[in-house]
Image (cartoon, rainbow, N blue to C red; front, side):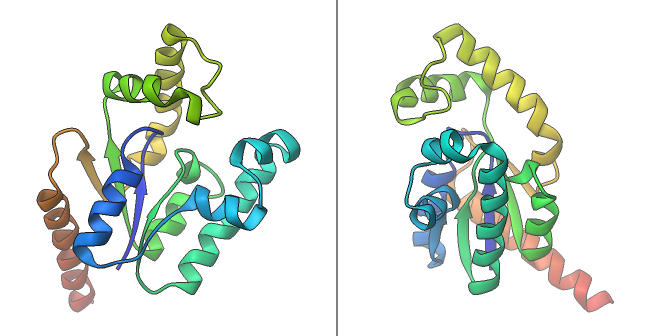
Length: 179
């Protein structure tokens, strides 16, 4: 099983990925962390030294490498990953895509606490942060909505999430048998 977790920064992709990994006994990776290891520099350094276009291209390459080189995994993707180079279509063909849909209020609350560890929002003021989240979410929603499974992150339990994934797998197997 290949599971891709998508959603806005602060939506809980790493949190849920680690929980799913332990429960389903699947290896967990964070796409940004893998890119940082390969590039030997932080995401903000890559953005400032090479630009977003370079980062998005590397992101696509590393995503494809992970899929090619691993049979089973849970991958926490960056908030923008599904929005570039048809990555959402690639992920859907390669495995199950789960959108952790989190409210703007919850995202703002979480990101205010994590601001210093997130270079893209470090310099954004409190009120401006809400507008930034709202704007980016509306730009990305078209991609996020293409996920195989959508969960309201604040109200889902680990057991419910696993059941949704298993149900999706069963539906796929039924479709394959009908062909």
